[in-house]
Length: 353
Image (cartoon, rainbow, N blue to C red):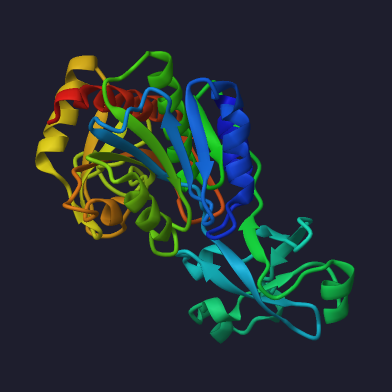
């Protein structure tokens, strides 16, 4: 699973440009062709369908989103600096002085630095001024516009993603990398589908739906939920960890404390019966979890739960520090707890809630 995590998290895939992530999914499920069918639609949504599905039973949807927050080339100046438009939610002050990769039309990756003026050239007023997204520029190490376009092949509309390596520290059991929101959720779906297929017929129809473009408005899930038409859905997320900001009584998404069961966020109010069901299974199986009530943020649950005649949705989150920035930390034990609970809950829905 560690190889899967590394390849999924390091893959280039801002919203709308998830092709490389889809390729990793296909690669790691190639040996499971006897157990499940894989389909990809025009929007880069991926559907994983167990071969035991009959089309006549309850359908359980396992959701995660493929995309990461990134940028797009908006314009190229005469001096070679590149202005950018955000793909997803960024805090402008987190962006400067980090490296990014720009993917050209022919698939080449070009490294750039988000320009940051040295303090030697800044007035005190400039240092104190709020940073606006419109002022951020990428430097690809050239001096003219023609070098950007003709030599490097960069064009307006090219996608941009953070450049971050991956590592795992066995001493602390901590993962380091980018895009844990939500490539860890995708890993959870893939691993859950593998385990469910290996355990034989789960008694329900299970479809993994890896959606595109969540970070720009849960657009992929709008399509996948219509295609799958689930009776139940489990949404796997890379949830923002809060253990560095609050005391132990207030913290609801701490590393090493298990999967996060989300009761509320700005996109949905949870299904109480589904949460009770999941907590009872977690307690019985000894799977660690933590409950969360969020006033901000959202997931694909916001789209899925209003599909058709309404869908009970359970959101399971892998606590991830510093989401929507370049760098993330997560605990392998939390990922495992998320997968284990997802598998147990999916297999338990033969008789409904």
